[in-house]
Image 1 (cartoon, rainbow, N blue to C red):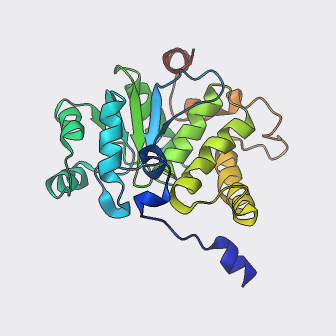
Image 2 (tube, rainbow, N blue to C red):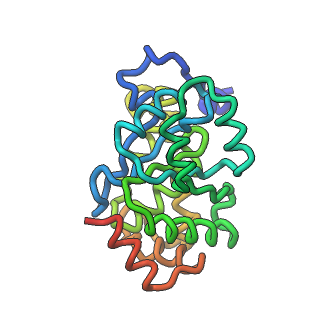
Length: 241
């Protein structure tokens, strides 16, 4: 029973339960290591209102002047269906889509698979051919978005705690789970989700991700996806200060 209670997460959908639109929409720029400030953003979907956050995310991507969207979950067909059935304005998103500035890699959650590595490498290679700032989302902006965010943070030299702090903000944005509010659930999420994501990139179990230099592991992941050294150098130059 204790384990079941620890794993149970009640998603909050009342905007008034959050301090800002940004927190409610799980919207923020990536930070950590040498990442450029206010250049790569992540958040919940501006076109999928299943979790009642789409209208807020749509306003925030326009406010941030997003120039390219990385939609990590939708297909071309599902995206068109979402646009057609949108419950609020998606004008900014549609303008980017009609201008060819919405990428649809259809990432899976099989993070270690050759297919995922190739799709991720192809996505980031294509991303750098467009002007930023960029915005990544899936449905919640938590899982696939969390993985790609982690990979980019790692590539930019972010430390373990920086990456963990960013990752856990998503659980505050949906469930009000923080280290202070619910330390048991916080530790469960860190151990069973965040640390597991890291191990999809850092395969060597003898490596301690808290203290190790993780850049080579992020590079290796993308190299295994088909990125050349020149591609990697170009990507790092594009996203790092």
